[in-house]
Amino acid sequence: MFDQAPLTLESEAGFKALFEYATIGILVISHDGKIQLANPCVEKLFGYENDELTGQTLEILIPDSYRKRHQSHREGFFDRPKAREMGSGLNLFAVKKSGEEFPVEISLGHYMLDNERLAVAFVTDITERQKYNEQLELKVRERTLELTQMLEREKELNEIKSRFVSMASHEFRTPLSAILSSVSLVETYTKMDDEEKRIKHVERIKSSVKNLTDILNNFLSLDKLEQGRVEMTKEQFDIKEFALDIIEDVKGLLKPGQEILCEHAGEMTTVQDKKILRNVLLNLLTNAIKYSEENQPISVTCRVNPFAVEISVKDHGIGIPAEEQKNLFGKFYRARNAVNHQGTGLGLNIVKRYIDLMDGDIRFVSAPESGTEFTISYPHKIKL
Image (tube, rainbow, N blue to C red; front, side):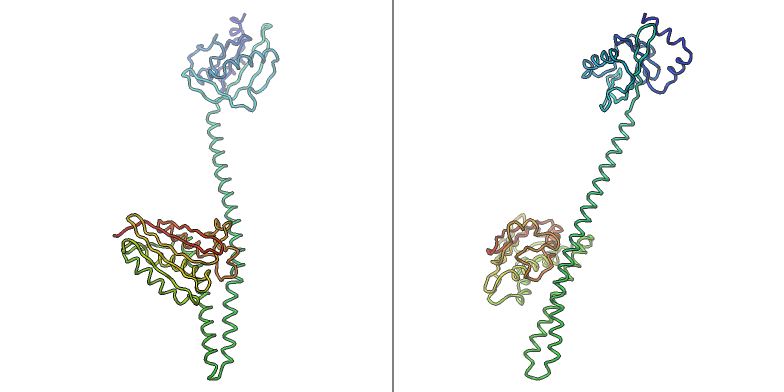
């Protein structure tokens, strides 16, 4: 009976034209799972020659891992036949004669011929569609990541702007107010015996101008760093002499009773960008002075070994609360116990960026009311 089915099917001219020239694969399967007809598209799709599939069990086109389950699904379809997509919501795969597996989309139909029920499977190779979808999904994920990063960046910028406005309103207002009040008072000191008062307020004006200059320099340094406009110019120099020169420069900032002790161990010569290293040490030293009380010592220790140069700056000041230490190098970040001390919250952020340019590292240990020790290190070179 089934042997006659193909002849009867192919005798229909319209069906034959559709069957032969369809651009999707068409299979006609009997109740026992045998392939009765396979159109040229199926043969090409699966790599078989003319009529090579006829009479074969349908499972020859199913990957090994799915064959047992597929047989029960096939039998279930013939028990309750209806037109539908096969494996709706699942990823379906077929196997070529060569053994290569590929993704497919299958639609099922059925009809009666000579009182026998036959199933029709329409098979489409969706390899290219799947590749396109994967590429599209990848682009969507990449774009989503970009948008997420942009939103995070915008959120960060808004927070930075908010902190900047808060900082600027305080840090700019304080020295400007001091300058204005001192200038007003100086104008009233016209007598010879007012000289001491005039000098006092002139010094106050100078100090306030210096504070404003420091703030602006921080902004300029940060801007250059973020735009990648900081160029490294390395040179060979005596590291101990270098440290002593910087200590001499900051002595005018020392509070009564404060002193800076300096120790050195190892070689004297190193190679680094002096300007950048100077900015780093000036920042660490001015912080140590600022956050320490009168009569408290500050120590600078230089250690040069065959692999690295280490410079530590240690104070006995207010320290950094443990829960805030993770944020210490953030922009405009200031620990809660530092708000009564003048500062922009940019210094350590700039220091960290400078250290990165030096291929170095910065670490610290600190505890409230026990002081802080910052240690910077960078690779040791003795020659350019």
